[in-house]
Length: 375
Image (cartoon, rainbow, N blue to C red; front, side):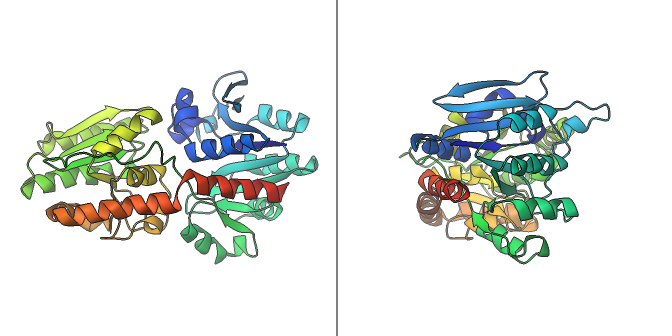
């Protein structure tokens, strides 16, 4: 049986370097798909590409396929919710997978609906996988969700929110936890850093509110932690915001404390997580960030914002991390580093939360059951 997870957008539109997709994007999905292969399924991860021709390659029996995105004069081919691919539709009409998981936001897209019709016409099944916390209610999306075999979301909070909406009334909604490989993302025995070492990993774009993490470094210095540092890792989605952040560093005289390290391969990240004391997730529009679980699995607690979505579903303030408001973000980070004994307990609980609830084994089991029920 052939199972695919289709991301109906280009990696660039999602702020991901295309050549790094196999080792950087949707890694829980990749690991879970590899386990499906061991069960005898043929599996493929699929995306759009700005390149003119379809291409694919295999790695350890898992296939990656990239369909040319339809180019438009108005630039819609760069907007992930408006991207389409005639090449993808043509391929599916010719050879429809037995189960297709369409990984898109709650807004969905016209293309996702068009593809769903092709899949149904062939007598096959599709599963709607939804990220984000906002949804577009229209006749197209009503039909798209109605005809899906079931819906996968990443947090219990998101499922609860959706179940209260007319758009998803009586729908089969299941939680697909985004797990990590705890044999890779694991804590290392090390001496505590002499000064707080903060870390941010993710896209550099305005809504991520990275400036709050920078301001936290200044607040730490003002509170006696003069050698506090922050490493910022990730691809640049907004050059304007990057320049603003660099100017903020200059204005706050943090040139020797805040470091922009650029994009790193996924395989390089465990070391950064292991060496940090606190992972910063300052966006108030955050959903389920995989980096949050990866950091916790390495014994590095997360400072997140209490907003609808992922952080509040995982972090319990003062127990396994820091969960606060944007207004109190810097203050709570200072409070965290003031109590050294508290840090050790929170670190232990962060590891426990990640290993007990977000291992790749849990992710793989949900995907296996999801696919088997669709088949």
